Image (cartoon, rainbow, N blue to C red; front, side, top):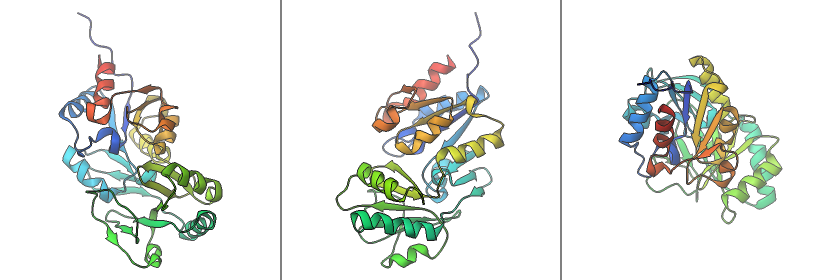
Length: 270
């Protein structure tokens, strides 16, 4: 009997929300087993998420994950085993303020939130900003000036009437020379340090692991995963992914609630 073919990638990069995590924010046993089999075959699994470290750490701990994780949309490379930040990129607050002013001059007042830098960085939420039902703890603020009191990884923006796609398009058009703009999920349009993407953090983490883009398969579901797909050798979109990501994916798999990651990994494992 012939032995199975070796696993063709050295690095498996997975987004969290809408990808690795099911709708109830758990990881299925089937997906855990597929990732364990991939690791046993010599590949590394790396989480690449828009969530900053404080909103990611509990998930990694539950998974027993001790490798590197790319958090904060690429801003942070986090060593989960040692619970420490290896790299962290912060947003230039003066440029961010200018960007917000330009966007608001075009479409009127925005609803704002912000993610503070660091292992214990809080997410500050201004008046009217809508957070997801059951989301992790946030710190409400009444004065927008409080957003700027400490270093930030990103600013979240919402608009009372524009859709996420419309808001992201306007923000990119009028402020794209000052900040990066991405959409990470429903109601989540973010302003980031210019040039920062998930691919930035993933390439840094991959280098530490001795892996390259050609060694990498990536899984995701939102436009913020597009740079990661462009960097990796293969990009796999989930069934429920945003159309912009599906358009650049090499493959579309089952949904996050139907073990979409495991379906692909099991096939590649033979």
